[in-house]
Length: 165
Image (spheres, rainbow, N blue to C red):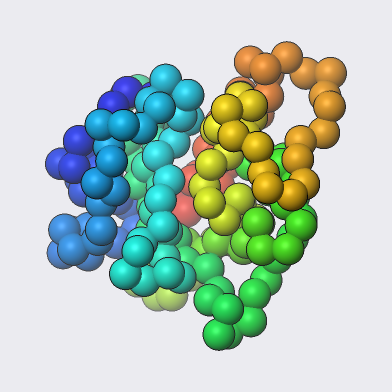
């Protein structure tokens, strides 16, 4: 993924208003991110711990950003042990059901889509072996690293496609 600027990020969101995108917390460490190892930029909002954000580059070079929510511990956690994107296992709270409001009129009507994802949004780093879960891990696979990366990107694209329809 190419390095992103704050302007790139704020202009990419498909499921929130321009005002919401303008107010959301952007990571301060953009210059230090391992861009060559990322399939998407994902981060949690330090001011609203039940919110996360994800921005990815599409095949045409355009960006798609989505605002995500997941249950806070106060409302009861919904967890699964395996991420649906990268297939990394995390016992406990390492995988959460992330929901995103759909784009356009469907989202304004309250429709949303959910996916089980690594709570820390480090899927790209887990697939590449650049990060290891504290507990859990990755299954040994017969797929090559490139095939695993392609699968992760395809799984993310499938989720994003559901948000657009």
